[in-house]
Image 1: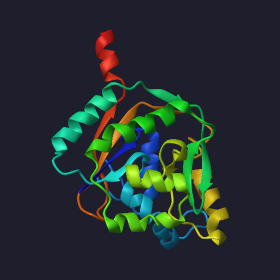
Image 2 (image 1 turned 90 degrees about the vertical axis):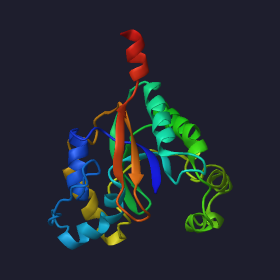
Image 3 (image 1 turned 180 degrees about the vertical axis):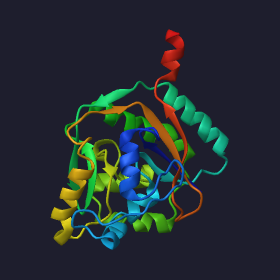
Image 4 (image 1 turned 135 degrees about the horizontal axis):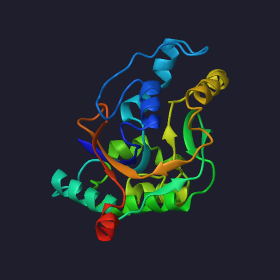
Length: 235
């Protein structure tokens, strides 16, 4: 079993619902949806090119998936997650944009957003005590010899190379898209997510996801609002 700390909008948020129907699965309920052809993208191609993000569920990574360290329990992790969410303030990403990161597409912040960077850094540090060391197989899958020195160091220290200065927030929408399909895919995504591209995104919740067994679809274990500790103090 692995756990992950992600940003995710609430289940009833329009972005969550749009993304679930685009990917073909709702990580809150486990419900799956048929993926018909869409504006020049045939059904089989759409199914194939969304397979990876469909398994992980719609999210933005804060702390990448990890098995629990020896001596740690799920109950301890959940308690730490509750404290983490309660002591952070919500904020807004001023604008989302569609971006191609290498071979895959994602929604990203259109400009540098320091509160977002801070949130990710806090998540990495806060939950590091719960992370079991990477297995040799997991380490090899990251191809450390091909990573820049700093990413290699972060992979060794934190189990994930894209943290702190290397972090780029992204809400993944596809797997690897072949070069001949990128123009069509971009047009389809621009249409599907038109109500969200160019608009702000309110970051008011964080989610604990769980992978029940290796290779299984990730599910939302719990989603909590940010800042409940502050709200209690004000009340």
